[in-house]
Length: 234
Image (cartoon, rainbow, N blue to C red; front, side, top):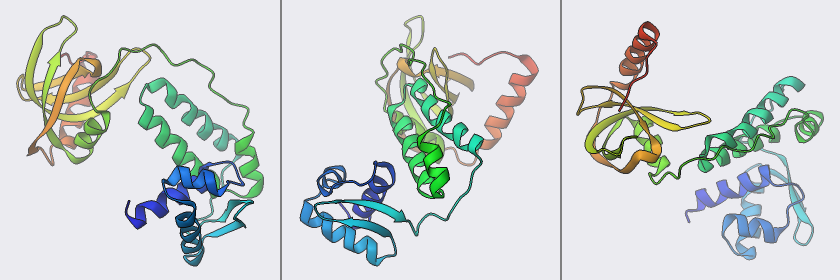
Protein backbone atom coordinates (compact mmCIF):
# COMPACT_ATOMS: atom_id res chain seq x y z
CA UNK A 1 0.00 0.00 0.00
CA UNK A 2 1.29 3.45 -0.90
CA UNK A 3 2.42 5.59 2.02
CA UNK A 4 -0.09 8.36 1.31
CA UNK A 5 -3.00 5.91 1.12
CA UNK A 6 -1.85 4.27 4.35
CA UNK A 7 -1.75 7.59 6.23
CA UNK A 8 -5.17 8.59 4.88
CA UNK A 9 -6.65 5.29 6.09
CA UNK A 10 -5.11 5.85 9.51
CA UNK A 11 -6.58 9.36 9.75
CA UNK A 12 -9.99 8.04 8.69
CA UNK A 13 -9.82 5.33 11.37
CA UNK A 14 -8.92 7.90 14.04
CA UNK A 15 -11.85 10.09 12.96
CA UNK A 16 -14.57 7.44 12.98
CA UNK A 17 -13.63 4.90 15.68
CA UNK A 18 -14.64 5.51 19.31
CA UNK A 19 -11.67 6.94 21.21
CA UNK A 20 -9.31 5.93 22.62
CA UNK A 21 -8.45 3.48 19.84
CA UNK A 22 -5.88 0.82 20.60
CA UNK A 23 -2.82 0.37 18.42
CA UNK A 24 -3.96 -3.19 17.67
CA UNK A 25 -7.32 -1.98 16.34
CA UNK A 26 -5.68 0.74 14.26
CA UNK A 27 -3.18 -1.73 12.83
CA UNK A 28 -6.04 -4.02 11.75
CA UNK A 29 -7.99 -1.12 10.25
CA UNK A 30 -5.01 0.07 8.19
CA UNK A 31 -3.54 -3.34 7.36
CA UNK A 32 -0.06 -2.71 8.81
CA UNK A 33 2.07 -4.08 11.63
CA UNK A 34 2.05 -2.40 15.05
CA UNK A 35 5.63 -1.28 14.46
CA UNK A 36 4.62 0.43 11.21
CA UNK A 37 1.59 1.92 12.93
CA UNK A 38 3.77 3.64 15.54
CA UNK A 39 5.88 5.12 12.75
CA UNK A 40 2.74 6.33 10.94
CA UNK A 41 1.42 7.96 14.13
CA UNK A 42 4.74 9.81 14.45
CA UNK A 43 4.50 10.90 10.80
CA UNK A 44 0.99 12.30 11.28
CA UNK A 45 2.05 14.15 14.41
CA UNK A 46 5.01 15.64 12.56
CA UNK A 47 2.56 16.80 9.89
CA UNK A 48 0.45 18.72 12.41
CA UNK A 49 -2.20 16.23 13.51
CA UNK A 50 -2.86 16.42 17.26
CA UNK A 51 -3.03 12.81 18.42
CA UNK A 52 -3.18 12.13 22.16
CA UNK A 53 -2.22 8.79 23.67
CA UNK A 54 0.54 6.27 23.46
CA UNK A 55 1.29 2.59 22.95
CA UNK A 56 -0.58 0.42 25.45
CA UNK A 57 -3.19 3.11 26.19
CA UNK A 58 -4.85 4.05 22.91
CA UNK A 59 -5.03 7.09 20.66
CA UNK A 60 -7.44 10.00 20.24
CA UNK A 61 -7.45 12.55 17.42
CA UNK A 62 -7.88 15.96 19.05
CA UNK A 63 -6.83 18.19 16.16
CA UNK A 64 -7.01 17.55 12.42
CA UNK A 65 -5.10 20.00 10.21
CA UNK A 66 -6.86 18.69 7.09
CA UNK A 67 -10.32 19.69 8.31
CA UNK A 68 -11.20 23.29 9.20
CA UNK A 69 -13.39 23.84 12.29
CA UNK A 70 -17.11 23.74 11.52
CA UNK A 71 -20.26 24.65 13.40
CA UNK A 72 -23.78 23.31 12.97
CA UNK A 73 -27.01 23.87 14.83
CA UNK A 74 -28.32 20.95 16.84
CA UNK A 75 -31.09 20.33 14.30
CA UNK A 76 -28.56 20.37 11.45
CA UNK A 77 -26.52 17.74 13.30
CA UNK A 78 -29.65 15.63 13.79
CA UNK A 79 -30.46 15.94 10.08
CA UNK A 80 -26.97 14.81 9.03
CA UNK A 81 -27.02 11.75 11.30
CA UNK A 82 -30.53 10.83 10.15
CA UNK A 83 -29.62 11.22 6.47
CA UNK A 84 -26.57 8.97 6.79
CA UNK A 85 -28.63 6.40 8.70
CA UNK A 86 -31.14 6.34 5.86
CA UNK A 87 -28.44 5.25 3.39
CA UNK A 88 -29.11 1.68 4.57
CA UNK A 89 -32.29 1.85 2.53
CA UNK A 90 -30.40 2.15 -0.77
CA UNK A 91 -29.00 -1.38 -0.63
CA UNK A 92 -25.63 0.03 -1.73
CA UNK A 93 -23.12 -1.01 0.96
CA UNK A 94 -20.30 1.10 -0.45
CA UNK A 95 -22.50 4.21 -0.48
CA UNK A 96 -23.57 3.55 3.11
CA UNK A 97 -19.94 3.16 4.21
CA UNK A 98 -18.97 6.37 2.40
CA UNK A 99 -21.74 8.23 4.23
CA UNK A 100 -20.53 6.98 7.61
CA UNK A 101 -16.97 8.02 6.75
CA UNK A 102 -18.07 11.50 5.66
CA UNK A 103 -20.12 11.93 8.84
CA UNK A 104 -17.13 10.89 10.97
CA UNK A 105 -15.02 13.54 9.26
CA UNK A 106 -17.65 16.19 9.93
CA UNK A 107 -17.99 15.21 13.59
CA UNK A 108 -14.20 15.37 13.95
CA UNK A 109 -14.33 19.10 13.14
CA UNK A 110 -17.06 19.99 15.64
CA UNK A 111 -16.57 21.66 18.99
CA UNK A 112 -16.77 19.34 22.02
CA UNK A 113 -20.40 20.16 22.85
CA UNK A 114 -21.57 19.65 19.28
CA UNK A 115 -19.55 16.45 19.01
CA UNK A 116 -21.38 15.11 22.06
CA UNK A 117 -24.69 16.12 20.51
CA UNK A 118 -23.79 14.11 17.39
CA UNK A 119 -23.13 11.05 19.54
CA UNK A 120 -26.53 11.36 21.25
CA UNK A 121 -28.97 12.36 18.53
CA UNK A 122 -32.67 11.66 19.04
CA UNK A 123 -33.67 11.43 15.35
CA UNK A 124 -32.84 7.93 14.16
CA UNK A 125 -33.84 5.68 11.30
CA UNK A 126 -35.10 2.34 12.57
CA UNK A 127 -36.70 1.18 9.32
CA UNK A 128 -35.43 -2.23 8.26
CA UNK A 129 -33.88 -2.11 4.80
CA UNK A 130 -36.25 -3.39 2.11
CA UNK A 131 -35.81 -6.82 0.56
CA UNK A 132 -34.07 -6.40 -2.77
CA UNK A 133 -33.16 -8.62 -5.69
CA UNK A 134 -29.45 -9.36 -5.69
CA UNK A 135 -27.37 -7.07 -7.92
CA UNK A 136 -24.44 -8.60 -9.77
CA UNK A 137 -23.17 -5.51 -11.60
CA UNK A 138 -20.28 -3.59 -10.01
CA UNK A 139 -21.90 -0.43 -8.64
CA UNK A 140 -18.53 1.34 -8.45
CA UNK A 141 -18.22 0.85 -12.21
CA UNK A 142 -21.63 2.45 -12.80
CA UNK A 143 -20.76 5.39 -10.55
CA UNK A 144 -17.43 5.93 -12.29
CA UNK A 145 -19.07 5.79 -15.72
CA UNK A 146 -21.59 8.45 -14.63
CA UNK A 147 -18.98 10.70 -13.03
CA UNK A 148 -16.45 10.50 -15.86
CA UNK A 149 -18.98 10.31 -18.74
CA UNK A 150 -17.71 6.97 -20.02
CA UNK A 151 -19.77 4.73 -22.31
CA UNK A 152 -20.64 1.19 -21.27
CA UNK A 153 -21.28 -1.98 -23.26
CA UNK A 154 -24.05 -3.74 -21.38
CA UNK A 155 -25.95 -7.02 -21.39
CA UNK A 156 -29.43 -6.36 -19.99
CA UNK A 157 -32.37 -8.60 -19.11
CA UNK A 158 -35.62 -6.64 -18.90
CA UNK A 159 -38.57 -7.35 -16.61
CA UNK A 160 -40.10 -9.65 -19.26
CA UNK A 161 -36.89 -11.70 -19.50
CA UNK A 162 -35.77 -10.38 -22.89
CA UNK A 163 -31.99 -10.06 -23.22
CA UNK A 164 -30.29 -7.37 -25.28
CA UNK A 165 -26.77 -6.03 -25.69
CA UNK A 166 -26.33 -2.30 -26.11
CA UNK A 167 -24.04 0.66 -25.65
CA UNK A 168 -25.30 3.16 -23.08
CA UNK A 169 -24.21 6.54 -21.79
CA UNK A 170 -24.79 6.42 -18.01
CA UNK A 171 -26.32 9.63 -16.65
CA UNK A 172 -27.35 8.92 -13.06
CA UNK A 173 -28.46 6.40 -10.44
CA UNK A 174 -31.72 6.46 -8.50
CA UNK A 175 -32.65 4.61 -5.33
CA UNK A 176 -36.13 3.79 -4.10
CA UNK A 177 -37.75 1.35 -1.68
CA UNK A 178 -38.45 -1.02 -4.55
CA UNK A 179 -35.62 -0.67 -7.03
CA UNK A 180 -32.16 0.61 -7.80
CA UNK A 181 -32.08 2.03 -11.33
CA UNK A 182 -29.66 3.45 -13.87
CA UNK A 183 -30.75 6.32 -16.10
CA UNK A 184 -28.84 6.28 -19.39
CA UNK A 185 -28.94 7.38 -23.00
CA UNK A 186 -29.34 4.17 -25.00
CA UNK A 187 -27.44 4.17 -28.29
CA UNK A 188 -29.51 1.19 -29.47
CA UNK A 189 -32.87 2.94 -29.01
CA UNK A 190 -31.54 6.48 -29.51
CA UNK A 191 -33.47 7.61 -26.46
CA UNK A 192 -33.31 7.80 -22.69
CA UNK A 193 -33.86 4.53 -20.86
CA UNK A 194 -34.16 3.47 -17.21
CA UNK A 195 -32.51 0.13 -16.42
CA UNK A 196 -33.18 -1.90 -13.27
CA UNK A 197 -29.79 -2.66 -11.74
CA UNK A 198 -30.57 -6.36 -11.05
CA UNK A 199 -31.23 -6.78 -14.78
CA UNK A 200 -27.75 -5.58 -15.76
CA UNK A 201 -26.06 -8.95 -16.17
CA UNK A 202 -22.76 -7.59 -17.45
CA UNK A 203 -21.24 -4.16 -18.06
CA UNK A 204 -17.82 -2.92 -19.08
CA UNK A 205 -16.22 0.31 -20.24
CA UNK A 206 -15.77 0.31 -24.01
CA UNK A 207 -13.17 3.08 -24.19
CA UNK A 208 -15.51 5.73 -25.58
CA UNK A 209 -16.43 8.98 -23.85
CA UNK A 210 -19.62 11.01 -24.29
CA UNK A 211 -18.26 14.11 -22.59
CA UNK A 212 -19.57 16.80 -22.44
CA UNK A 213 -23.08 15.48 -23.25
CA UNK A 214 -24.19 14.44 -19.76
CA UNK A 215 -25.41 17.83 -18.48
CA UNK A 216 -27.38 18.54 -21.66
CA UNK A 217 -28.92 15.07 -21.71
CA UNK A 218 -29.93 15.30 -18.06
CA UNK A 219 -31.48 18.74 -18.59
CA UNK A 220 -33.42 17.56 -21.65
CA UNK A 221 -34.60 14.43 -19.83
CA UNK A 222 -35.83 16.47 -16.86
CA UNK A 223 -37.68 18.82 -19.23
CA UNK A 224 -39.35 15.92 -21.02
CA UNK A 225 -40.38 14.32 -17.74
CA UNK A 226 -41.85 17.58 -16.51
CA UNK A 227 -43.82 17.95 -19.73
CA UNK A 228 -45.09 14.39 -20.03
CA UNK A 229 -45.08 13.05 -16.48
CA UNK A 230 -43.94 9.70 -17.85
CA UNK A 231 -40.87 7.55 -17.16
CA UNK A 232 -38.40 6.21 -19.65
CA UNK A 233 -38.47 2.48 -20.22
CA UNK A 234 -35.80 -0.04 -21.17
